[in-house]
Image (cartoon, rainbow, N blue to C red; front, side, top):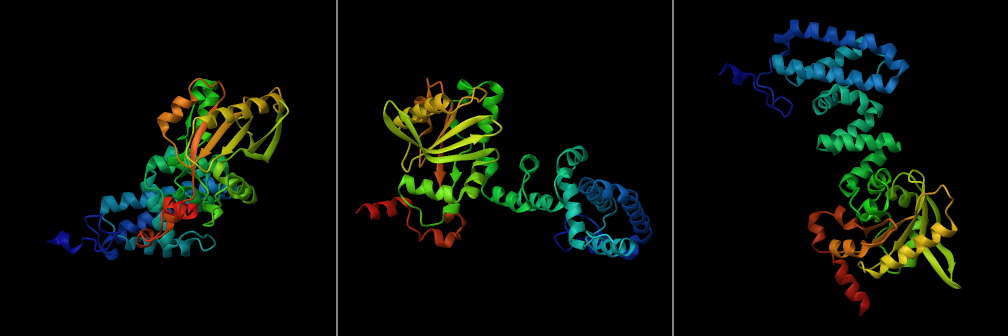
Length: 359
């Protein structure tokens, strides 16, 4: 019965068996807050010298100390309000000691129990970006993956949130391709990571044109968003790039150069489902680019075929035997996914719209 009297009544207290009143933990708390103040004081110079990394590590240390005290002595959530006041009084010139931020410190330490990973990975990204990882990603694997992408690509917290919402981790490395058979192992691994499936063209809006050339034009008009969706390292070369072969004119839909892979990337865009004949056309364009545009130091041109739908088995058979690296992925406009469920059922499907347009 005595324990029940002290059971936590809110969400923060519920996980702790006993939450004594602040007056009951006075002596223990006094020593605890002095230790925290000492930690802050000792790291102030380090925080100035190496601001972000030291600050993140300091926040982790505070969060871990709170977790340990709450587990060992059953302190409830109210201790955080007291800590916020005491730390603000002790360090009035320092920000970051609001009750909300201290709760995030506790959550931060709980989600990242390995201090070595904290130092090597998340201490390298801003605190605000770390909060996005805590709020938007549920798994440790996902947090590590997105944190590494932030470091590699220099994403802001807003770009990170956009990439999380788009399901980037789940889409990366998902294209059907022949990279293993056509590229050296290191290059193959990198290429597989670079390309995804599906590609999301939500930024084109709801008024999606049906002709390929119009979609290409809109993609280049929204080139910043398009490059963001393609990923780090892509440089735009041109649209409808003219190639003359055997006195015939051919036009590459979209041509890019990838700075890390050190090669051209030919993108062919189709507004229909995959057909085996598309691979032959793309392969020819790659051969021409390799012959006419590539510098001797460039790696083999990679082809990316974007289609509205595909059968993976058919794609795999179609790619077999080709010596040029080719990836096949779907492209989608997924604006409807953001709509409330009660509205989705009232929307016509893509197939229904296309039937109406064809009448």
